[in-house]
Length: 413
Ligand code: REY
Image (tube, rainbow, N blue to C red):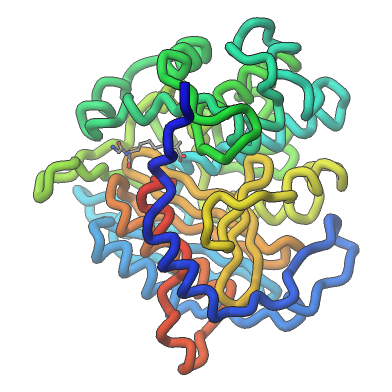
């Protein structure tokens, strides 16, 4: 079966590449893998976050249909939070940085950390075939653990068909409880996208299989492993994996899903099992916990230097020269030359960005309570440029739009 062209790669990539071409990325914040290492030149000269710019990006997300949005930045001068709009359209409760929400695929970084700890412990090998651990699970003996973590397995993303029609697709699964095998079977019913290792093709299936590997290697449900290896270790009191419980406990943001039909009212999508996503996207968290998680990860508190290095070793995901993927971790190269590592997330009703600089000195968590509205996601991505690059000099105004988030639009992440 010939590989499908990957529909999430966008035509506008060339335009974006042209836009960024004017920027010579500064000596990268390529980075030390432990906290004791000295800051790079880029980091010593780190610009103050442009919090007005952050608010501008949050407001732009609202202008594109999000009822509310928020961001929390941490840096050498402490934490700064900004909120706009509401976290609940019915009660009118304002957006609140202590509120919890669904982080979608930022969960993939959690899963990756657990898996890489198991590699550190000698339970799994990155370059071993998945079928060594899960015999006959995959139809191709060449697919390795690393292929899953880098989205290079060629296993199709079952969510494409599942959510072809957004609201009916969501309603059909919002109360369902899937087994891992069921999700893998949905994927294997579709043609494979690429030869193992040949190219990047983002797929939730990869991280469902990562969850299966974690459960196989530990004998425990992924929930327990997230809990003991990350959540407890870092004291993340507002982070949980409650699958298949449909509720978000405590103070939380309500999520609003845009139907495909223009002008149709949004659907409150807060409660769902998120069983379709599981270890690919079902974690619940909040801004400060996401800041702590990404910072700790970059500072080497969760993984050995060897595994941190493996996780942050990236290949491009598109032709812009600004977007990369490591192991369950994205790298975005911003217009000022700063590199940030983290993940994006989309789950019905919620868009999330959680990123940190490679030395863990600065981090940003941003969320908007809507989805299926690419323009809102793109706008939310503007918080990264504002937070990490600071105020743009007047001459750079023409480039104030992040050369980034365009690709988040079709990519949905
Ligand atoms: C699934 C569709 C998004 C969301 C997805 N999320 O794969 C994973 C991720 C966990 O990478 C839905 N879009 C939306 C549609 C489009 O239904 N027809 O925007 O909420 O974060």
